[in-house]
Length: 351
Image (cartoon, rainbow, N blue to C red; front, side, top):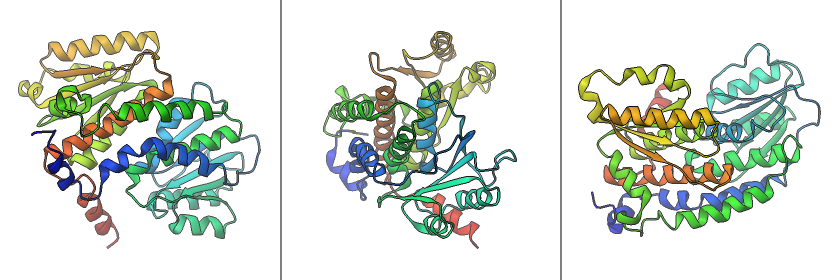
């Protein structure tokens, strides 16, 4: 595959997914500014915060949790499913229901569960049933505008929540940090855009390594959700198998599985997201684990962005993963936007 064939890139990318990815830094800032005009939920001493969502609506919450958990004093969890845990009851539990379309059945079920449990409830969506139910129940409802795919709205799913947590004083104000990220990532995109030749383009090089292999992305701490993001983007954009693992957990199981079948080593591409912000023991683990995969014969890479803030690092790696996934879709000759398998399953579920 010639990753530098611009004509083929734009021919396959019929819905301009590349433009959506390139626009993510601006989307981040737009999300922050949009959220500043929305009403806040009731101020009270919350004991727990649950963010309910699926797919692209959940990944922003994952990234938020990975970033703020070290300095946020309220327990925060991300729920992917239909039901709240039994302990989630009463007004001191805040349930934030996030659904891009507003029609995600799992998130709608959690909304109803939260109402029955007398939780404090708010919603984030572009409209749909979730927004209408929120208005009917007189709950805080944030409605934003985005016409693309949910996975292309990660700037909204993260930025809206970051603003919420900042304005509620659950974390220090993040405006300056976010502004820095927006400027830094815009510059970074210039080095991995479609016009940059593969020889100088980190994203194209990684896509070339992943081509015809099964990528497995490893991350730790704040980069665990980023590893998940890489996996889901490869699934949805390139329509290829991909998986993610996280450390230190992988060293207690996955590492033992490198022996059989003996042919597996040639089929996988293992990629480690490294960070100077990791706990020192995780830093040692990621280097040793990477070495073990290489010694076992796996095609293996390691990526890091030294001398970056944690938030900068998160978003540069998110963007790098999105560009890699996009270039993989082009290499496989598929339009990165449609997800027919997901739509077919949704239709079957509704029969």
